[in-house]
Length: 323
Image (cartoon, rainbow, N blue to C red; front, top):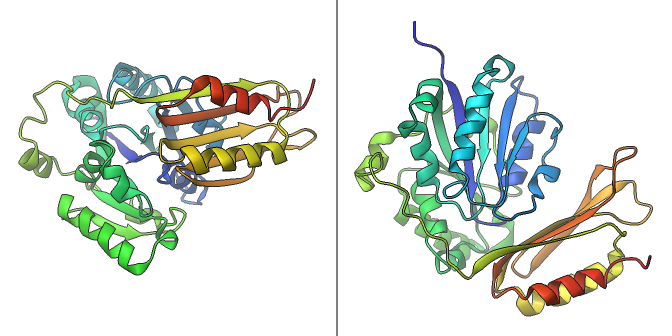
C-alpha cells in the first residue's frame, strides 16, 4: 500500500514582503494542525527564527546560503530527518530567503527520489510587496521568478499604495503569471484555507513555461554585489540612539539596503525589541519575552548592495550602552 505523502507548502517572496508574518499567522491560528517549519536565511546570522512564534521545537534553520543554491542538500537532509517522525505533524512549511528562485526548491520535491516518495508539494505561495514590487523587478530576476512559480499570490501591503499603484502592480503580476490566484492583503492577513491544503501545485503548468524543469541543473545566480552583513552585541542597545541612527542611515542608503532586521536587547526591557526595515521604510515593536537566564544578545542584519561593513559596524556600536 502506498504510504501517505506529507503536504509541503513553500512560502516565498522578496525581501521584506511579509513571509514571516504569514508564517506566524499560520502557526498562531486555531486550525488543529501541527506543522514542521524550515526557515532559510541568506545571511550567516539568522533572525527569522527568533521572529517565528512557537519556535521552540519545530523550526529548523538553514543559514548562510540560499535554499536554491548552497543549502539545497540541507533541505533534503532536514526533510529526510522529519520523515522519521512524520506522525508528529500534519505538514511542512518551507520559508525561503527573499532572494530564492523557487524553481530549484520545487524541483527538489520531484527529482530527489526519497523526498518525492514521501512528500507532496502542495503549493508555492508567493508574498508580493505592493509598495516595492515594481522596483524589485529591476533589481534582478528573483521577484519575477517568485511570481512566475506561484500557485497562490498574496499581494501584500496594499495599504501602503494608492489604487492606481495597486492596479499597476496587479497588472504586472498578471502579465507574469495569469494563472495564480491573487489575494490582496494587509499584514499578510488571509484565510488559511486560501493557501493551505490546496493541492494547487501544477507540474503541467510549470513544464509549459519551463520544459526542462525536471532535467536541468540549477542555473540561478545571485547578483554578486548583493550580500548580507550581520552584527551582534552583548551590551544593551539605546533605543533612542538606534532609531536616530537607523532612520538617518535608511534615508541616505535605503535604496541599496534591500532589507534590514534585528532582534535588540533593550536595557531593563523584559521583551525583545524587533526591528524591521525594507529600503527606507522601518518599523519596530516588542517581540517575545526573554526567558529566565537567557543571554540577552542583540542581532542586526543588513541585505543589500554596496554595503559598507565598517561604517555599519561603527554605527551600531555607537548605539550600545556604555559598559
